[in-house]
Image (cartoon, rainbow, N blue to C red; front, side, top):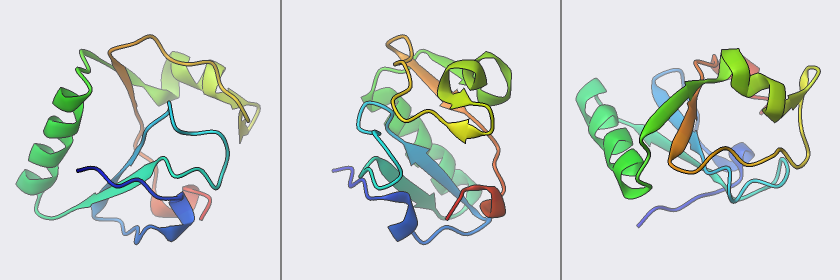
Length: 100
């Protein structure tokens, strides 16, 4: 069972992966976030299971095209257009840039 919470309630460290389910996201307090912690192998297996559960078949880089429809300038859009089904967005974002 995947439990999603608002981003500010997660215990985010620099040694974890933060996942946002965009279908549930509708603002900063959305319960759309989860954090994955553990060894590199444990995090990889957990992330692979999430991608498999959602039948993700494509991963897009946030720094590229995705930023144009998820952001308005330097801020996230309040209601971004949905990405094409079976896709995910990846971004390396240091903890100090998560907006906690």
